[in-house]
Structures are given as C-alpha cells and as structure tokens.
Image (cartoon, rainbow, N blue to C red):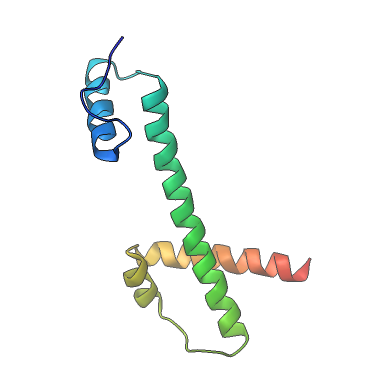
Length: 103
C-alpha cells in the first residue's frame, strides 16, 4: 500500500500525490485518484454550466430589450475563455433556449 506524506484533502497535495503515483504506474487507481479526477470533472462541469447560465440570462435580457448587448470579446475577457468558446456557447444556449421556449 502507498500512503501520502501530505494531506490529500488539500488540492495541491492531492495533485502532487497523483502525479507521483502516475510516474510509478500510469494506470494507478484508488480513492485519492478517483477523487482527484472526479472533482476536476465536477469543477469543469460547474464552470460550463455557469457559462451557459450567463449566456441564457444575457439572451433573456436582450430578448426583453433590457440592458445593452455584450460583445463576444467582452464576454470572453470577463470569463477568461476564448472567443470561439463564447460563440460556441452562445449557439448552444440559443438552441437550448429556443427548445425550452417553444416546447
């Protein structure tokens, strides 16, 4: 069995432990490894959901004629993502909103 030297509940220590383990065995498994990858995936999915929410709210505001239009560059800068991601997310949010409003 292998035990970490540091507290694996701290993200930096957990990342270091997983990195060290994968140097020894790239196919390593176990609770710390699963926890590391699951929390990373969860964080990314929350960030994506937040982007979609922001876009949907912005679309609703624009459709109601309230506020002023945000440019793709401004949204990308505010969310620290690429302009291409903003455009892709805009398109996805529009399709989702249309399907919800029509159905």
